Image (cartoon, rainbow, N blue to C red; front, side):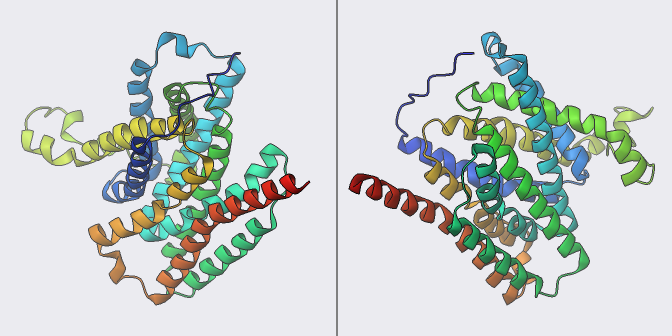
Length: 331
């Protein structure tokens, strides 16, 4: 298959604004998940189904013409994306947004180990050093008087980070093979299909046989008194509004544009900016939920260590490349 044109135009100022705007949106997704009463698994199922349905009408017919192998790989990557979102929202629900985002902030650390495995290169020593510093930050946080729910939320956030590192590394190989909307619709379809296959096990082993909580199944819409109470219609649909925002703004727009921006923005700038997601998210959480009142100094010290380590990784990477270039010139 012929690859897409990789000679993309240089990044514009608008591209940088788009990237920061997307990162702010991603920082807000944990807050949306916290607000919604729908459980994490169902949230991701509805999110991916809505996004896939909308994107299916946006993808041009010729853009669907991909080798079956690529389509299958994108669908399987979508399963990883779905698992990432489930653990991400679960972390925010069982703990809080700040804890969730602290765990997520370790994503670049895991990328430092996962990416070399995919590209068959050596692991860099400074990446290992930064990983140890991040572990120190997590240790400091755990000195906080955290409840078992907070610890569980942190673990789920770290799992979400590992999955994010995995699918972002895989996506890096597809950006010049398929259009961004095509990549997104196939991955959202894969995520939704994977969750649907998981539902019988989810019902039997994770919800005590109660089945998935569709939230709406006992609502006025689905009984004999349909249309009798318009007030209930307005009251219940808070979750629908949040789901629509999550699917359209945080997925159809943000996820697709982030894939498309990889063609023009350098990896250095992209990683540096995306690493600000926990910063934006924790600030937003403090504003919306007053979570700063529930955390002590150890939490913020540990979080600061993690965020500084994460933000310093692209800088070390950039300096390392410069040193290598100078050595090559000397040779």
